[in-house]
Length: 182
Ligand code: SF4
Ligand code: SF4
Image (cartoon, rainbow, N blue to C red; front, side, top):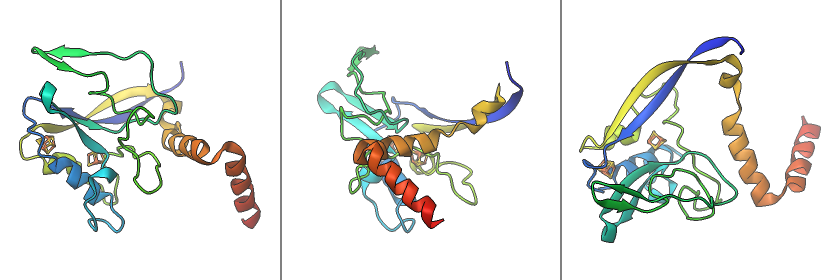
């Protein structure tokens, strides 16, 4: 086991009983991530989306997590307090099974970055925007192995999606060209 270091873990808890599906969180996230900031309100650019199935009384706020090239083949169904939630309800993976969390123009995955910004926000935008206390922000410190802190997860996510979109060869050629230019 390697050296242990403290790592800050940030969480957003979702209370689905308090959520009324107003979608204000989507708007807040989309506006915060617009370029320039707050210049547009396209919910398709939001990293948090409401999974809505009115027939099934299903209203769940889900944040985008990781990119996956393939859709999973071992799905689940949840029954909570008599309500049935379909297989993808709680999943934040960006995958081919649905059109969630894909940037509408480029198709690139949109992962929740907890509103990384400089200066940092005290509370992420979606949590600030929710007037129904359905979203709660929490921070805690955990001990992890030192190398875990330097895992280039964000870089991997972007590279995987670019490889899927353009192919490894094209991407490698582009990187080689850029390296030559210095
Ligand atoms: S934490 Fe920030 S980036 Fe993540 S879903 Fe909420 S508003 Fe979007
Ligand atoms: S802002 Fe709050 S109540 Fe509205 S959809 Fe988002 S989580 Fe639900």
